[in-house]
Length: 177
Ligand SMILES: CC(C)(COP(=O)(O)OP(=O)(O)OC[C@H]1O[C@@H](n2cnc3c(N)ncnc32)[C@H](O)[C@@H]1OP(=O)(O)O)[C@@H](O)C(=O)NCCC(=O)NCCS
Image 1 (cartoon, helix red, strand yellow):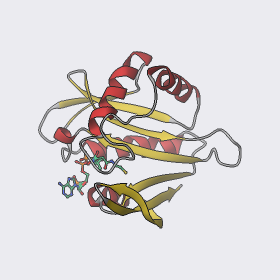
Image 2 (cartoon, rainbow, N blue to C red):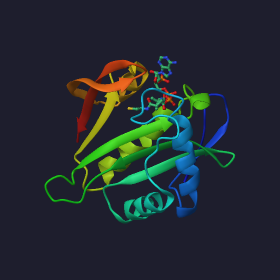
Image 3 (cartoon, helix red, strand yellow):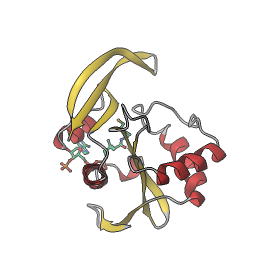
Image 4 (cartoon, protein in one colour):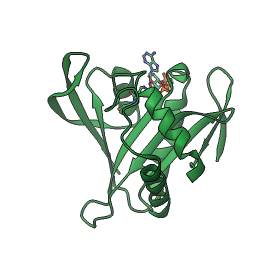
């Protein structure tokens, strides 16, 4: 667990989630899905049931190459960030990165803190050699954040996303250790 401060001075805790957090995490995803066009799902479209998500958290805790962290302010979840990897010998060195910060807490330095934490964790878990991520071409804030940490663009998937009547390109980025 890490206690740190946002740029506005508010105290934030970054920690591993417990099984009991699962429902609040699902609720969080269902809300933030409606706050941004840059997630793969919209409002109330998070696809996992409580049981499935509890199992996902449980399995994630048991493996060396996956991690989920939550950031909280006064016990309210304001961000979830993760690196998830499979267990097959040929691909377990590759992690997939995901992050979302609640809209009212964006721009307060939390994205940088979570990236710092997850990059350090990835470099020291003994398995991960590459992290990939998928983002939207118009998500310039996220793309700049990822570049700051050394991610490079692998490729563009043309018109891979359909948001508000518009087809948008998807950007695949990665970093190698
Ligand atoms: C992308 C996201 C995770 C960044 O988190 P954040 O907490 O807002 O990021 P930070 O406050 O740490 O800022 C990170 C960098 O982004 C840039 N940035 C932040 N807010 C910005 C703004 N309003 N305009 C331009 N650049 C901005 C800055 O370069 C900043 O770095 P700096 O503080 O060293 O200057 C967050 O905006 C988010 O969750 N967005 C919606 C969901 C999403 O897009 N997820 C990623 C899907 S791939």
